[in-house]
Length: 101
Image (cartoon, rainbow, N blue to C red; front, side, top):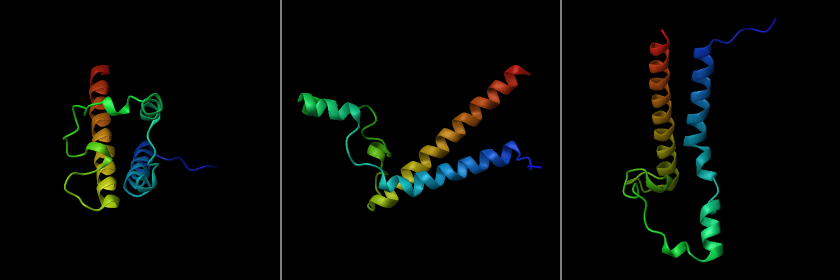
């Protein structure tokens, strides 16, 4: 018989895997431009783009402002992103559960 895994264990294992991927594996992510940037470069209007509203934020461009080492900078930005996303999802789920009750 297959042992049952609790929801808490499953969520914590998923969160741990996401944190590991964000902290370590993100360093080897592709440095090539995404699809939109590629099209802009191909059609010749990539140079006309301006900065976006979050360009001056502490985690702009998948890095952490003030952290010089690229591996640490990108990993820290990924970990903060995962934790913020998890916190927002937890809050949303708590609100939905309360509304349903």
